[in-house]
Image (cartoon, rainbow, N blue to C red):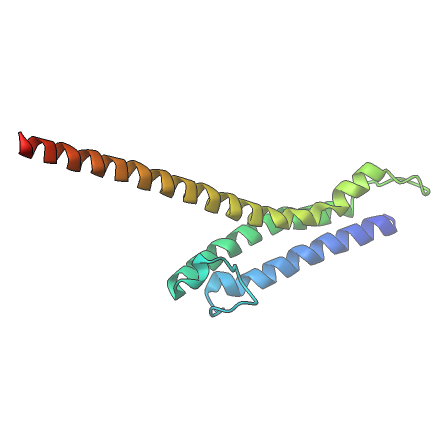
Length: 144
């Protein structure tokens, strides 16, 4: 084990533990609505119920994605990154960029929001068209 192993292992484990520790109060519902700490979306601020529900979901995602980061940190202690100064650059970059895993929940949440908004607008337009068609068919039947 060399300095690269120790540095990458400790940094990945530290970030994973930090993310889990920061997510626990959100998961438990201990954080009141605020503009500094938590998942801050427009819908989060609509009601307290939304705030706690959205933050619980975000906390689960962050905790779930912090576990692989923790495991990468543990594995970094045992991976051979190269001997005698012959560092395997690709492997070091892969392990060093592992904290980006924590960004995945944000991407998933944004993608879910996008798809939910699209499906709502489709349902609304489909429902509206159906209501218009139904209303116009009833009106045409009554005039006959």
